[in-house]
Image (cartoon, rainbow, N blue to C red):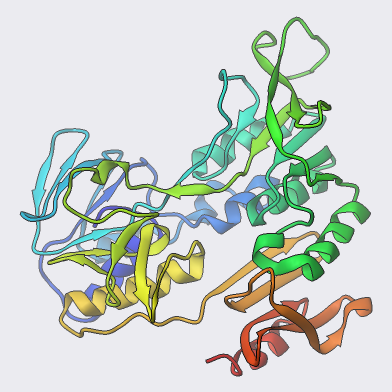
Length: 386
């Protein structure tokens, strides 16, 4: 098992529940035991949760799996034909089955490294960002997707001056379209977030000699601002880059696997004989197209399918995608595959009341259901998806 996060751990648990008793080795790039990622941008970042609460399982439950967790030693190469995984510490592990669950690598802005510039993917990333947020005044979030919007909301709830910049006209526009994107923009502006949308970020400016940032160390070489394509510089003590992420497949170059925006798999999540992929890194055959999903629910559901197929079930993976996001007072839940060009209609509730369920249609086909502060009703509408 290459990857010790949600997809990797769920695969191990499913194998054990199904009676698999052979040795299992779990390789984790980080030193931390398996933890959950969605709370990092919300409950953990704002301080409501500590590190222990992000843990997916307590030590006793991990021990009961009778698996060898090798943490802090990332995989660096795979011989897919021989099913041999090599690690940074020069371990060579041979297996009957290999599951790739290495997740994503966050994209960064090109340029010199400056203090105060963060990405958010790991627990350590979140801890470092929280430390800076506690003493900063002005925060700029670069990125108008789910993660960027969540971080902006959390930073604003901590009382910081927050500016969010991104190239789209509306928040989450490519995922949820302009109707819901405009509503999210209204929400953020009402809560005091300064939105600078529709303008690309071209770089960062550094700090030389500026004083008065109480608690922030390393004055020289610290970020000062974010430069936009129109020439404006947004002042910043802290910058968070949330421009998406790429599948963590660099270690698989030369492995013999097909790599194309992820590990390419068949409908059973199989990349080669005895090689499977699960979670954010997996791109699998779904009907007549290749699909890759970046969300927590998929990591768990796909892992369950992989475990079944390792044991010979030959079960195709056909999920109804689902993700959620919490921003300020709003909980959004999305089932299906919405597109920016889909027709959006309110099926229940009322936008003005701040509680509604929306349907996304392409032609005569319902492709997604979105709930805005209506979780129970949204689950019922999900039944209309096929």
